[in-house]
Amino acid sequence: MNTENFIPLSTLSIHYKVELTFFDNLNEIGLIEIQTINQTQYVHQDSIYEIEKIIRLHQELDVNIEGIDVVFNLLQKIDALQTELLLVRNRLQLYEN
Image (cartoon, rainbow, N blue to C red; front, side, top):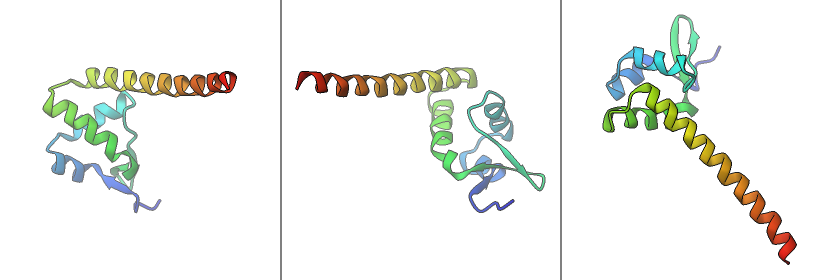
């Protein structure tokens, strides 16, 4: 498998100053997806934005991993509700005109 679009967890661990077990815990609860290629663990580069948000919550606000999971679930629900609200508003505008 080509590792061109993947970043090794060891690199992320050094860069963000977190333990490798932190990423394992995130993977266990489903917040990130770890790929193992040639006995090296990687994450896809598209996951970096989410990983940075998670690390900021953990380091700056001292939120534990379970709390991060709750926050991300609530954010997903908010996004879904905002999308639904936009659809309803658009439908309502059709009837008003």
